[in-house]
Image (cartoon, rainbow, N blue to C red; front, side, top):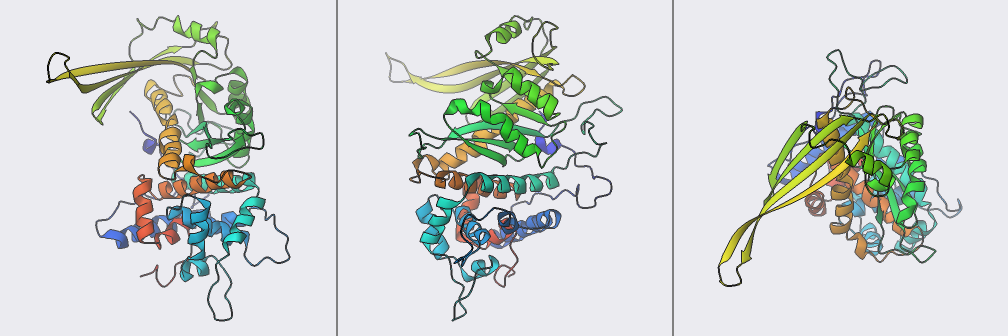
Length: 462
């Protein structure tokens, strides 16, 4: 199976910075000092390419406070809060306490003021809470998404092409190439309460390659995902040309307006899974001759006590299939085998049993066979679930989001955005184990400087 790391990184003509792929670091064996060096190396390349670190991103967020009486810039407060989340703080009380005790070097790097004794002064916890109350959550989310997308495109540049052309058009050999992808999905903020008394949701879009959130919007109940889809993608497309990209989403977004929007307005492609919410289309796909269609691609994964086999069968879209811009349809099947031990009712002995579980899914795509082969379609579908496994799961388990006591106003949403930033910064530095990296940061806070692109200090340089 192809992976997103197989995406080619050709240089664009006329731009020496874009296309210079920043290599992901290997975790060195010489402990914290080696980790610091690796992170500094990667972030230095990122900072050279993007032009600034995270504080410059925060400087673009509108400050809701009155100009009179400001002692701390909004960028410095948000930077310190992000540093606290990187250090493992999971709630607002922990963040404000961490900020109050932040080291002098970090306060200096954030541009904070000194008092009469030459000591850098951290913002008071009440100041941080007032900023969270007044700050517009969408402005912060948009700024963070633009920053992470810029870093993503430096590591995974779009192939050079003519304006308006498909960057991943098949070459002379006619073989399709794996494209950049975005996955859209929503998640409930279970610890929060909206103005209507219901649990709010956060709808986000993440990259396939490194699974970082590059856009998000606050929505109401779960049914609010579909109306928020187009505004969210328009926000991302306002700063990033999505021509030729692949957009994936769960079956709740499988509808004709979304398919039309993706192809005609974004000039991108869709991969959609069909279920009961589109009964007529599902019935048409289910009636196709899948039993006589040969398997086009197979993958097998072994781990966690189970063996998973995935297969895909692909057909050209039927002419009578009433769906916008559909080119291919496919059947995905996953078979999971695992060994369990059951106790026989008439004996104390454990009996070894092999259990098999099968799941099938029908899907459609706007890409032709020259734009996406069977292995590519399988990769796009599997990459989509990274937003569940690598974003939502991390927010729940590592950052204890569902247990958060930050409940009202814009504070829950800002906390979510800071978590997305922390996850994105760690992943883009080349580290996939979020909890383990946070433990390293907690034991060596100077890793924060490298992750956030802050200027080196006397202590971080040693």
